[in-house]
Image (cartoon, rainbow, N blue to C red; front, side, top):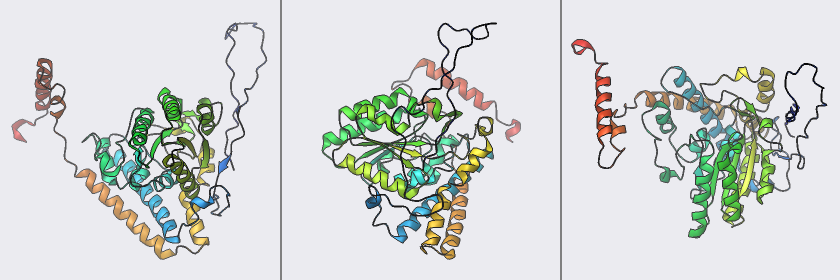
Length: 397
């Protein structure tokens, strides 16, 4: 089952043609072939209707999963979605400067996050809230940067989870370099780097593919293709499906249904095992959908229609796992009710934690610019101090 856009491409105008020339000879338009490689193949273990389907290649990676573990995956996704919704509300209330929602991508993040081992190292972008949850990062710590009170909020080495990266695609190079170091150390751990379909157009990503392939680095490149790089669809960024790009660099790529948490778990486990076994990098394309805005400063209604979102709502990752749990008698109403109460408690805790965050030292920015101080920095500090003092209420009120 593959969801591919069928929108025709607009070919480039030839060098000799001129737009808007009266009486110009009309040239015949040709439509570029969308896929110059093989047809896209999608790994799927759980259909949108919640039915388990067999896969000879990847079933073994989830063969021993227990009902308790399935409920755990469901809990992870529900709590991650609840936290994400609370963060979006906090931004709308002026408590956060910005927020990048993961709504709709919970299975891609929880499935891949739960596939990692404790000694693996994760390099995220700025939307991997579900992966952070799997790595044991307190959700409240994710919000400090978006509130502007710190530069990250956690020690990356305490959870082997790097700080969020705002620069698009740069973390793939960091992950590759780290993975090369892991290989030189002789460790059997792996590295996983997250990025989006938009970042796949960055030169940093291509360079990381080259280095990881040449040096056989134990890294998994995990691309969450949520169909939209802000307002640009994937079809305007790649002539082939993203996972097929790996062929040109000499390592395997696979596309998995990013709304199928079991499929993502299985494929990511396979890719990480390859890396740990010294078989080099893998590109995993999780074919999913960003249900909300790119960030809270974006308006997705300006570039995509409601019918597209409605089609993807039918593939909701949480709903499909719930259907499977209920059909398999792996969860009852008591479980869902308890989880609902837990999710509300999480939202309340995060809300209170954000509002209790202390303001940062406004002058700390001047302290580490130069080791021995600088006259210009001293002048800027004084100007800023005067500016801050101008907001003081008269009469000490």
